[in-house]
Image 1 (cartoon, one colour):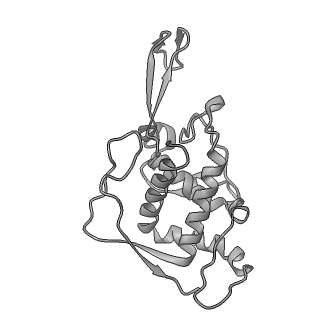
Image 2 (cartoon, helix red, strand yellow):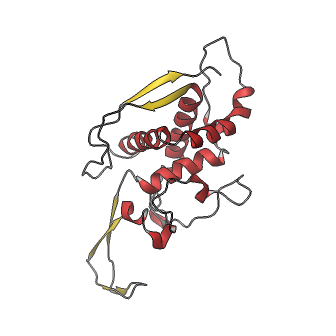
Image 3 (cartoon, one colour):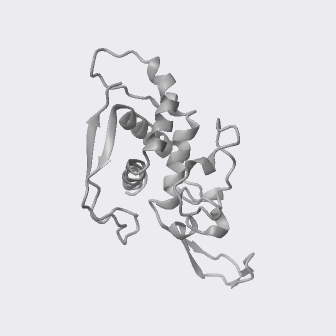
Length: 207
């Protein structure tokens, strides 16, 4: 019930919230999209440009923006693991068969010990290689938005594809502005929804 619907919808809400506050990041994304958009056939003035999954697959910066949002606002903010056999964790803590371990992904994404002194900053560059043309390697146990190891989300590639095409198409065709006076806060739930939703104004771009 939750996979690829509530999680994707929730992630997209937080993505547009973050981007509406960072127009400089939006400009970089549009620069990355520009070569693709310039080769697409436009039927006439005012026609929207829609990006296909195959066209967005190699967009490193757009993907970095997606991952950076998921780091700070993971749609599934907690993980529950059950201990199979008695063991000692790398931290030195002893665990026993049958114990339940709760992992706060939202807290992990904001820990200085994991992400550095700028852990609270919205910075997609942290995901990019030195040449900025590809993503750098980040182990899945550090970034648990799609779980890790043999429990990795089976729908990860589909979910990423959906979000990248929606974000790319929306940002290329529209300016997204937050409406003033709204209260943005997460809802206490198994899905990290916005408690009061998100109100924005879309303005068609002249491209």
